Length: 204
Image 1 (cartoon, rainbow, N blue to C red):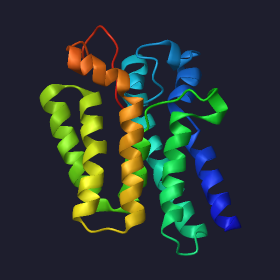
Image 2 (image 1 turned 90 degrees about the vertical axis):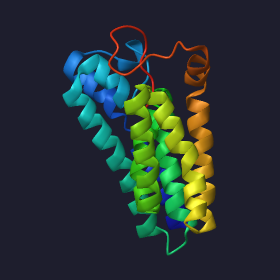
Image 3 (image 1 turned 30 degrees about the vertical axis):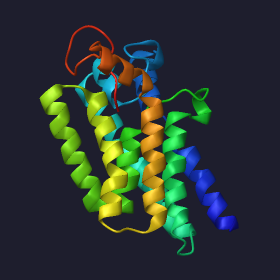
Image 4 (image 1 turned 60 degrees about the horizontal axis):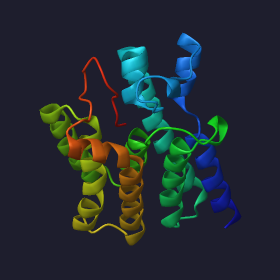
């Protein structure tokens, strides 16, 4: 049990490393949360810093989610709930990072990193559907929400362990909560589209 608790705590601390904030400080000497959408994630990094940093942030955010699950598998003594808790802890850390006044991103890239190790195929399917939605609508926030909401259904259809299904339910609720302002904008038709020159981009 002690090792499992350590794994969850380390996963939260790992998730709290906000690469979007760090890249903005290193490259532009700014706090990215004061620019664009104010979100510390890959989408806002794309708008504020450009494609290269955005790709790097996206991949690193995925990597920390995967690393957290691997820590859970390593220290969890075979308990299914430990890698699930570690994945959720990394997402929580990304959203509310202890190093950056608990103001982070929306956790989608970190979610991808965690869930590809929970169950690759259903995560891939949800990701493909989300990408198609983004390509068609150019709303990153909509694609992110579709991705998160599809996960519990797909994990259930794949008849996975209950710990993973409950984990995806938490992921979906977190995504809805973190995108609540985007949902209002989508309903009002005021959400910014990917690649637009004005407004606030939201999403991952």
